[in-house]
Length: 197
Image (spheres, rainbow, N blue to C red):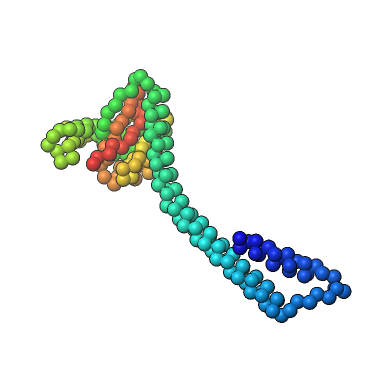
């Protein structure tokens, strides 16, 4: 409706501007004032609509900005878990699962290895505060050779993240972290930190 009122005003101004110079056009001061007032009202309305739409766009952008990192993190978790499964499936049927604390990851001319203190997480024990405990008879780190394509994952909070050697070693220095370890013929192919509540 309001747009329809604006169109005749624009057409009138267009016709007024397009008149030949030798033709006389009589417009009273009241008509010019009325046109100016109509034009000002229409401009104010359009500016108000534009501001409202800009505000809505800004609100939606804020919502998108908040949800994107969360969604991206969950997508990242799914990707990490998918890679872990693929890594294991590619090496079936000779997988051996162990658990242990890793002191460090070593990369040198002979390849990649890990210093591991083997331990076992025992769940549903009925007497521990979180209903599990870790059994570690001897605190002894032994060197375990890793496959050339070994993958490592560490927790940030409750979420697993892939880690290169430097990030992995930084993380294991923070505190003792228990890992699920998967071997093929005595070569470590996957180390994924175990969440301990």
